Length: 294
Image: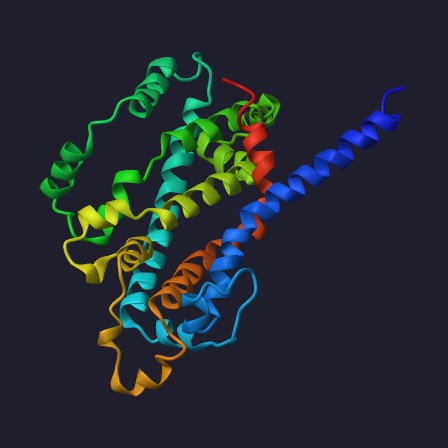
């Protein structure tokens, strides 16, 4: 009978749970290892004694990192970038996906518009033309160079477009009968019931912007304007402990390049780890509902 638990179903679910648990642990182990190193002494980290638990527990690496003006400045740049990018990207994605979700009778040349956006996913102008355009319009070495080029991700448009197309047309038709306009239909009907898709797109945008490092490296002329991911990339190449203040020499026994790097990497990942649980419940639903229609 449908829904009846058999020995085969029980075995399958047990193996599936064990397999997913092992895969989850394998994904967590590197982060736990980095966290353990960041809380360990320099001698323990250098000798390879640290695995998944701190050895000679100390906060000195975090105290040293949080006092570094470069780290705090790059964190500020990234926070500003995330706010601007998420705000602009969500607005542009919504007002682009909504009209494209209509049929050909409502929006003429809809198919042509859709293929216009899809074309940009398949073919890119390349790094050098993109750099020249950014330089020509005068936003090079500014926060807008990190925001505007990726303000309208086409994948997000397609995801939200398909979600809108899956909503019952009767909702909008009843609103039109009551005298609503397309704008009122969008903001008062479509968006309130599209929270899973919007949360998914928002999460994609936040993670993408937060982890983006290459654009900061080529579009920012001064290290003072590097976002956090770019700054972390540069410190992975080597951190200069010779520049610490004289009052910090007492901490050299507990701080090394490895522990300082581990502390900065974990602090860089911490905001995403804090945001994700609040949006995760919408994530799977938004992906599934936004991918069943073309």
